[in-house]
Image 1: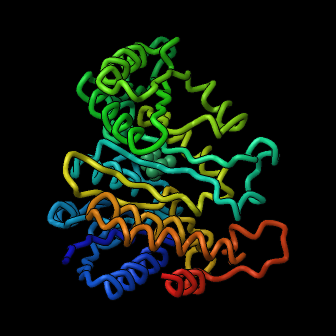
Image 2: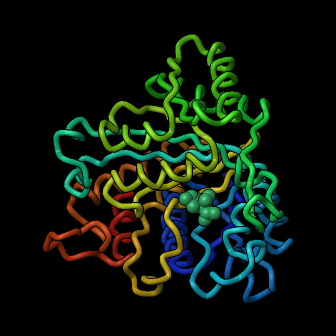
Image 3: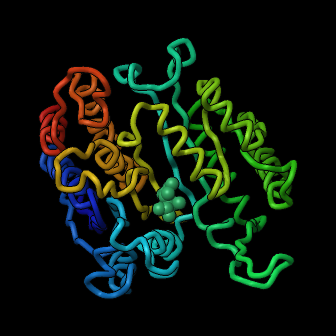
Length: 357
Ligand code: IPM
Ligand code: MG
């Protein structure tokens, strides 16, 4: 089969890790007889430098005309002082919105080979964990009304958390569908003891859950969820939550896996077209040094094959190759910790994964 893939390499380590994932996809193409056509588009700081805008129109059109999109990372100190609308991060929100990607799947699982890198005490993760965070991605406070005004104490800034029934329904449905393919357990995370939008969230999630008699849906307050993640991560199967809570909890969960350099993500909407990206950022401090861990991006490419192209065997092959390099004790710099293991460079790790496909 033939697929058109848009590449948004972005800034910092973005280009290096996307190149790694492209090499892996090319290997899959040769082995399984698929053609992947890659077209790069500018996003983030590099787009600001080249065009004056973080998300050029051409990038949006290109992504909408692709079968799927692979993204590296955006941002860096060079662009940190720009105003809100001109920041590289704005491009990320812009492309998510333009592609109507309301679902963000962020799997966090503990690889047995990386148990030693997990910061939690051994007895807490003895049985491992495999969590699928389903984060709402195009609503909530990220996209709510905002601005400046005069308040009780003078000038103030505000952002608003707002969720419609429709937005909650569709993300709750994704969570339940996802749970049906896993352990049939959903924990919905909110702040219903304080926020009106969370009370609506909770009500609607349960209405949707009623359509899924096999799925057990329970609620957890977000502060408790932050605590439960480090107390007993094994209790989570699917965790569904709002844009901002999902942003925060997915970083927390990623750290439990040993390194944020391991976590892929898929952003999906109502069609098969998705945007796939590692959950880590552009790490400008290590850009160009060969220290970046390409695994999160390579696993994001695997998610693309699975969710956008229905290429299950191909996705499995990538994931298995990643398991094997880790089992073989191969590590990038972020994963070596205090051990005396000699870390592999980005390219070396990619080669080792490719060898095992
Ligand atoms: C993420 C990032 C983004 C977000 C930023 C860079 C806008 O933290 O993808 O988790 O908050 O969604
Ligand atoms: Mg984040």
